[in-house]
Length: 40
Image (cartoon, rainbow, N blue to C red; front, side):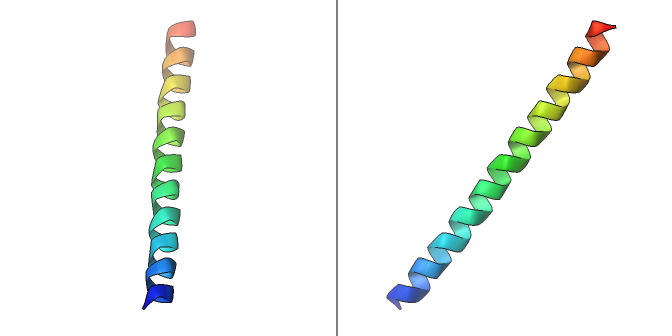
């Protein structure tokens, strides 16, 4: 049971990191698009 909990925790941690990375990438893309839009 403890091993299963550890594996589940690692999977959830990995998914959380992927979601955080996706949010950061979308924010970076929006900032880049805004900077290029206002830069010209």
